[in-house]
Image (tube, rainbow, N blue to C red; front, side, top):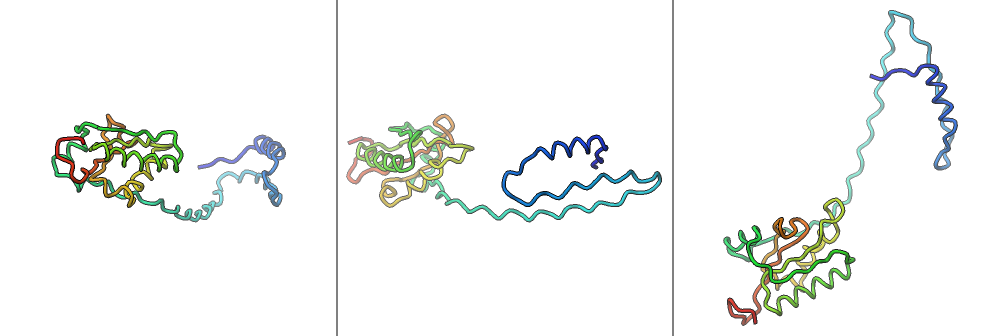
Length: 185
């Protein structure tokens, strides 16, 4: 329930309101109605109508959805070990501080070079970004699904908390053709 302003408060409010300058050119606001005299004792005040409900804001434009992380290219035991962070990381790249174009180029070059070296598990550190929804965090999974690198990737999943959690991604690379198991060529 709201209370009415006393005459002193009303005068103070009008003197303060007179000093305010509008931010943009607009029609002058209507004069504030005078405070009505208090109703005689024993009468009910008139019911106030609720202001009309504001129309809901239009829905925000949808962001491009990241493709789901996927461990379908791994057997169940290896996928579980990957999610738990129990597989040794062969290489890592930190994309902090890079703008989108240089980060994209560095990521593609890194994945290509890591696969050439015979690395199997790499860590891509994106950072979480402002509010946990940074551009790199959102775009790196999309970049890893591009035709230039997708054939080299067996699986990817968010990193375990000790390796960066939501601000990093494990990328499990496929073996190169002709590469022997258990050896890095």
